[in-house]
Image (cartoon, rainbow, N blue to C red; front, side, top):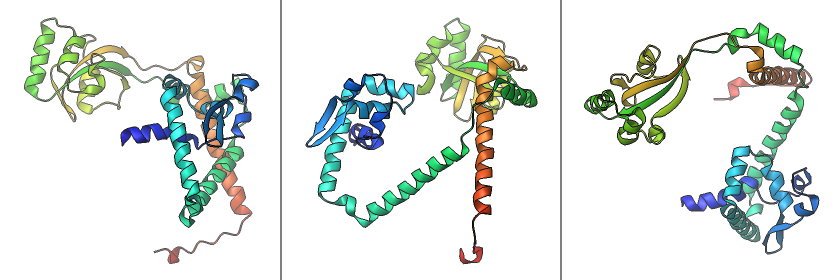
Length: 282
């Protein structure tokens, strides 16, 4: 069943051919874009249609798709086969499907209208710098630690791991062999960087005091017993504008979109007749 949904995901996500989307600018030449990649009965899917839709995805997703292009294209074929058969049986004409299409159309139209109505103009460095200076605390670098951990079932198991570490066995080696947490086991227990308030309290109390490189004693946490090692600790500090400029732009733009959205709703409400009968809604 999982394989069925995986193969079909490509077609369901892309929604079939998109002639309008194919006109968008992509890297291949226009002649290449007109090449037919898939033919299912009378329906043809061109390279341009596929590239146009891939262009809307995150780079990492596009890379994964291209690495598994055979499976991806097979998903498109299977989806097209299913769609054609569904149309042949007139499933697309059923009242329930028509209602769902209408709801989807309504949602997409609203989303596009909001996108157009709340879009912000290009921001200047001066605007961003002024916003940064007025909100420096928001962009202040928090105190943080980079940790590696070993997760174990029992306190006894945790002490056994500590004993092995104290004999000089590398932390990563012990983590790969003993940790029960698959998410970090293969990386030698490296769990990444976290700021204050982002860790299990029991871990945080130890992590921000433990000397760098020294394994901790067993710590009881919500996910089991853990032994941690601090790989790096960064002190809190004021951020420099140039270092956080992209973050400032993102926050500033989102704030402006939110303000524009509220203004848009106010204008619409002021020009409309709205009645809400709260007592009728039980």
